Length: 499
Image (cartoon, rainbow, N blue to C red; front, side, top):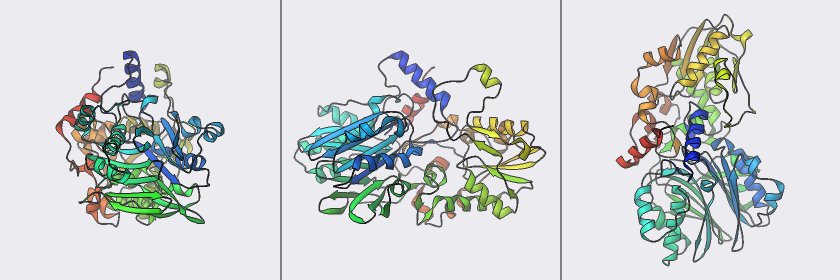
């Protein structure tokens, strides 16, 4: 899903602006790349159902959205920059008829924030059009790009998502059917990919051989022959679909008028779900491993309290992702839980920058401390991660300005020391604060009285699953899919573009 070039717009001035906006507005958090949705439901309004599915997956990407529907052999596509509710209207959805659909909501990375890279990607083949939505990131894009160009494929965008679609088209145009072409293409792709793919014949749901990014299957309530695919179960809940199961690592499900068929395209599947999906990315009401992530995150907080106790008056979480762990911390420690921060939930991603005077005067667009709750208190603030430390430092200062006499920070994951190459937008290693500083040094830099992270063992054991079934490379540097040196260098170049 992530572009394979450092900067992409044709206008050099636009290149500069895009990079500055991205750097200025990004949170001090890893950013999820996107959410995908797919549906096969004849006689249903598939465009509107896809719209609501994407609406529930909006947290996975807030910069562009798109839906492609198939009405027989005719594909209908609408995609644009903006939130799902901004991109689509009743009028645009009425122009997307069909019996099946795929949808996508996207968070773009540096240099890729323009309409041309919005998804789904649509390509032409001898069997008809193909529409593909992708969550993840390939690590062999340079090799795949060369192969496609050598075979005279026309690359319109700069995304690896289009490359996957073109690889399928290439196989199909050489005589393969949809399934044969897809399997052959997936074996040429290395990295993370959870895909929903629409063709005139049906819809595919696919995960890479490690299952790094999630993908689930559901059925429309009351009609088990109508299937739905989504990045998370919250995308099923919103339309009244019932969760059936996960798409397994290395599995391809093919949904047609004959029903759902399953194929294992990879000979060596291995479970390596991104642990950050459970800690932070996925919605707390989504189900993984037969329980809500809210429940798992509360257990993280309880384990954190056991590992790193501290004497204080109140505990609270950074809204919204830190709240379940803070509640768990409170339960295990016996320290009262309170709301110390109020989040403005109506603030989305913005490219309007505050003036320097606004910054100096402490503009608070997203979080505001409750002074009467904090004044004179020893507080514990729980968050899910620290990446660069810039937001944490500002937050701690705001809490002290509001009257907190002690500020103790507890993080419900280990220190992030390595970048992700599998579809999450993280900094390069030299910009990750925990890669070069000790916990004590980080505490001094962000201005807290004490700082403690959850242990790596505690994070994995708290899943109550086989601890080998997760990718935790951002904490350990142990990447399940080998990262070529040229890809590591490309990421470094991406972050060091002059502004």
